[in-house]
Image 1 (tube, rainbow, N blue to C red):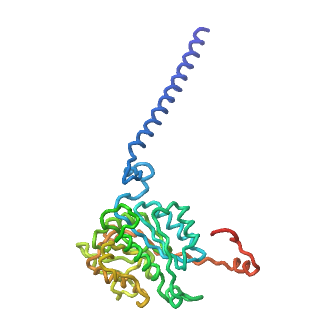
Image 2 (image 1 turned 120 degrees about the horizontal axis):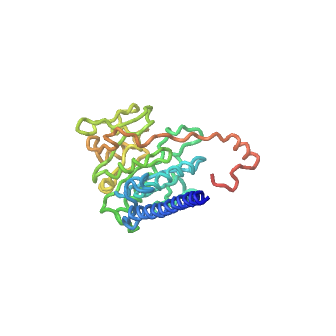
Image 3 (image 1 turned 180 degrees about the vertical axis):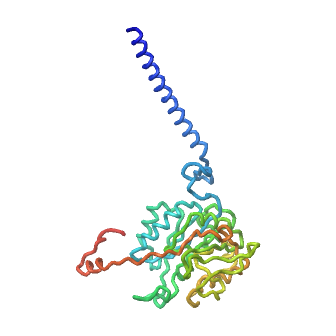
Length: 329
């Protein structure tokens, strides 16, 4: 009987010991996690950051680098909010991007204002407007290539950026005179890695890289020689253009734009020549800076959004109703 009691007491002691060890281990692990989090965070220019490979920023690009002014022309249409929302999610992940949204309208819209507020990007964005002249506006069932698009809006953005860089109106601290300008259309798909690459563009340079799913090819890309010099482009559509590349395939060091105020877009150029129109004032092909792993990586795609079929909505509107009554879609 005594032996049985001792046997049970022994098991109880072992069980309690195991519980105690597990409890102490859990407390120690919690302190270690808190400690590692504490030492992995730091302050960079007043903004909390995490060391590479630690915590949530293991998924984010480098926070350091020049300001990238991402210029997005936009206009009211059923997919506008959806496309701008997609872009806003990318921009939120890249803290050195300043978003310049220019609406094709006679005033700014509450839709875009609400989107900036909800995405938390009000402090690093500006909402502008510039209406396309009626004679250059697409009509009815005109194909989207019939007339140049985004000319008025991109030029308005360039005007705003030049004024900001000259006068530093908002007093934003940034490396002296060095920033990047990128024309970020709202119907493309962007990797956050692209902005890391953009941040390495040198003063006085135009950076270039491949663009996927454009010009009738799987990829349009700069062609380099063995020394990494840009010789030309593999474009299949109008390869005779001075710069046969897509708007998504280059970004400009801002000092070039300040030194060449005549560099802008134009209604007077042939279809497909908008890129060449601005770049001809800023650089030559051989002087462009190849990025994205010597132009071997695709980090942006010209995906475009399919026009939604809204036949049922149109029928509903004829009866004086609409499915989105009182809603912002």
